[in-house]
Image 1 (cartoon, rainbow, N blue to C red):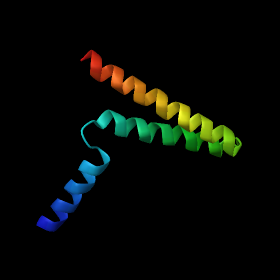
Image 2: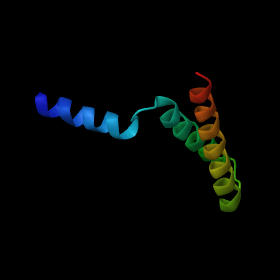
Image 3: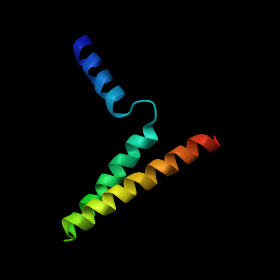
Length: 68
């Protein structure tokens, strides 16, 4: 049981880290990008959309942390 807890704790720290908002932003950006791909957009459009969303969500997360 200790091994399973240690394994889960490692992955939680690795994925979530210090700020859960950034992890949530990555998941949201990937979900929207998947939606764009499934809607039939080109690969370039999907890549640009994903990159812009990731950058936008990251900036919003940092602004929220700075204002707090």
